Image (cartoon, rainbow, N blue to C red; front, side, top):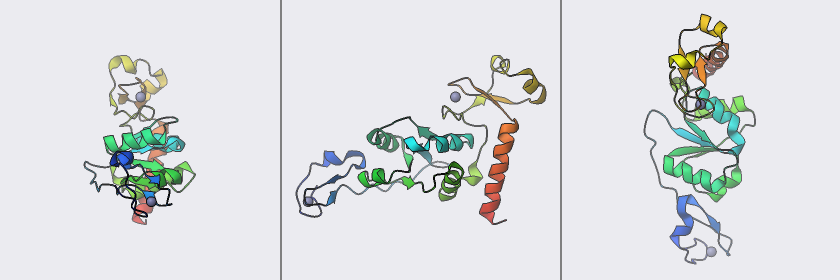
Length: 196
Ligand SMILES: [Zn+2]
Ligand SMILES: [Zn+2]
């Protein structure tokens, strides 16, 4: 793998997972990212350490978004490549250092605007599925078992019939005021999108 500036030869294994490095001549050396077409109903994501709240919001809307506290860039990129995830990052240095074919640099600092940005960039609004994924574990919810429902406060049990649970943390979800707020927010997003 020759440096584009001076021709010095580098071992290709140095550039695994899209890593790049500076040659002593001042050129950036690295391989071009492979073009990859995202399969399935929508992309899944991995958010960098700064985007934990965005990751939670994406999950609330049903989207698969991995997030690990304090994950080093290398581990983040490796997981993205191995699991076919789009990297969501606020870190320009990461985007420079790693040539990842699927990386979106998030512009805004505010979580709502970040969410709008990602929904629009990837055309996700029509695929929103509330109460389908645990916001903490990023795992798909399943219908709640009777023993899970028993842990729900009685006043909630009186008003709601449908409960879901996270197979990982056993948290119980239902169509409460919380999801009403999110529903309104999504409705606003969809309205914006159609220019209504
Ligand atoms: Zn060079
Ligand atoms: Zn969970």
